[in-house]
Length: 220
Image 1: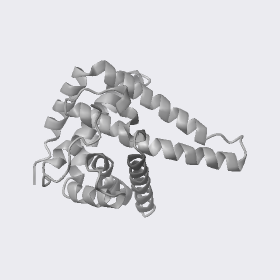
Image 2: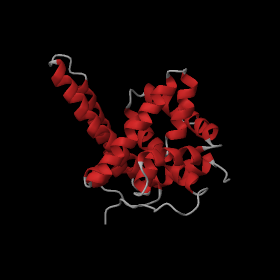
Image 3: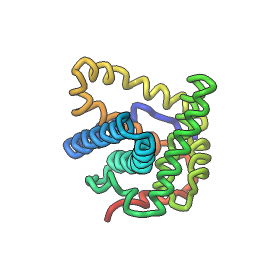
Image 4: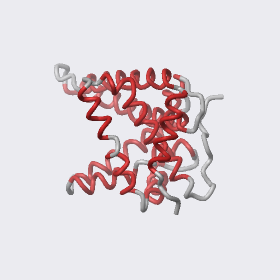
């Protein structure tokens, strides 16, 4: 079992973030804009019920795969690979990949929500437990959504406390972001945290047998 080494993950994330500062800042802003737009579509209360349901369904079909692709982009940045705006939409370039990304993100959200109904703490714990599934589905195309979730549970076993502490370690940046009315979040907190949290996958991957195909869905 490898050491988690939170500081090491954050230092590497910070270094790689600085290496691709403006692309990561720009793409992170675009992510926020797209997420806000998708939320607005779902929140349209003035349209008929059927139309609203259709808009929500369309949003789910986009947001899930988009989220998977974006997190994979941040992981590629963490590894020091040159990222491109096309990486944000890579899950939409292959029908099978889109379906797997959609189902994986949906099941992760569903299972986490169901556990949260029992109380907040079980939901948080399971959220960490399932969190690597969205990376695994990109890294190993042979996995099904349920297999990716199961493998995520195995990968995070014994590390969920470390993952929680790592999240807490960003609280200073979060508070500073609030004090700057979100400006710091745009230019530092959001992209830095996103790269660092994606780096957790790389760290936990070191504890696995080499049966995961690395960076299967990357642009040439």
